[in-house]
Image 1 (tube, helix red, strand yellow):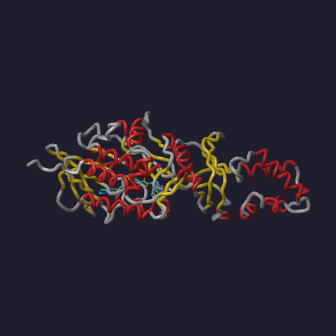
Image 2 (spheres, helix red, strand yellow; image 1 turned 30 degrees about the horizontal axis):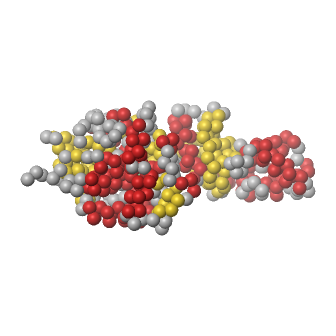
Image 3 (cartoon, protein in one colour; image 1 turned 120 degrees about the vertical axis):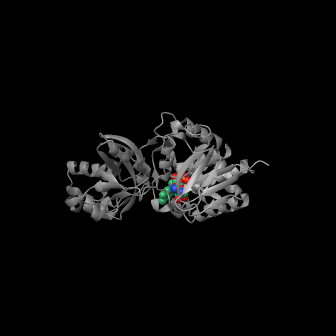
Length: 410
Ligand SMILES: Cc1cc2nc3c(=O)[nH]c(=O)nc-3n(C[C@H](O)[C@H](O)[C@H](O)COP(=O)(O)OP(=O)(O)OC[C@H]3O[C@@H](n4cnc5c(N)ncnc54)[C@H](O)[C@@H]3O)c2cc1C
């Protein structure tokens, strides 16, 4: 009798779990094993979406994904095979009801990331997928067409196929410490330089200590060489080191990428709705000033801003009576309301960044099967590859879809 083929997956995160499930569904006769260095699987999934897990997005577009490769063919192939509809169906089939929020972001209806991990665990139990916990892979060799997976303490495991799904470098405490990059390099793969993304930005400004804690929905712009290169309307949160909040998470990649190119990067803030242009802001301001001639400017500014921002952005002028404001002062007030700029001095590193850009060079990976072009039988999926998505369910989608495809094609 022929021995069962063994498929081993290093990493029990979103992509590794999905690869295991898909592999077992497509190949019931294979023995599928997950090796996970943690005492639990899916620890990062539990942290996603502030514990609510933004599981996917109703509109996955190529433009929301980034890679250093000249072509996005590989990303396109994966989503052609397993798109947002299939992700939703997959989770619905695990009895998870989903709901769609702003900008197509999809969450479990129960708002519980734990429910996502549980349904995956139940499915793996049903499929009899083996999970080795506390299994910290130290090294991988290939001998006689078999992968020999060595652990720090214990007996090595032999496998016919190997999927590396060890994630990137962010949130090391949850298990992703970059080990997979070393394994990939040992098999001859080149690595695209990593940097953290979907993270808070540090700003150069003396007023941060005073405005720390202020939240407001604003239009944020990334400005490089006096040109707006990205903008996003959502909430920001000033902190004592800089700025955070969902709008900043959305634009952080562009800001960091330019900082790393040694560019001077500014965050410009328009404290009004996205659609309200500078001329309209001026019109509204003049109308409010007209109606409040005997009042101080600070009472008019309540129309636009949080009181702490009024106190700290408008110096003495805030206490002037509206009727005494000069045209130059009014021009300056409009400027502050529509284009307050802060220089970006840095960013929150791996301990706070939600994702890792860069990773295993996808030009060295078969764009249909995700098999290594360097080593037969070796595959990759998830964040370890040089593919990253925007904030909004795009990164988990990449993990689910690349995992599903790789597991199904072995
Ligand atoms: C705080 C936070 C919030 C996020 N929120 C969202 C969100 O709402 N929506 C979204 O789309 N994305 C979100 N992301 C991003 C998303 O979680 C990741 O892109 C995705 O989980 C990556 O999955 P992965 O399987 O590739 O890697 P990981 O989830 O990092 O899994 C890798 C696994 O490999 C294991 N491992 C590593 N090295 C070894 C080794 N040597 N031996 C054995 N096992 C090993 C690790 O322990 C880990 O379990 C968030 C990320 C963070 C940190």
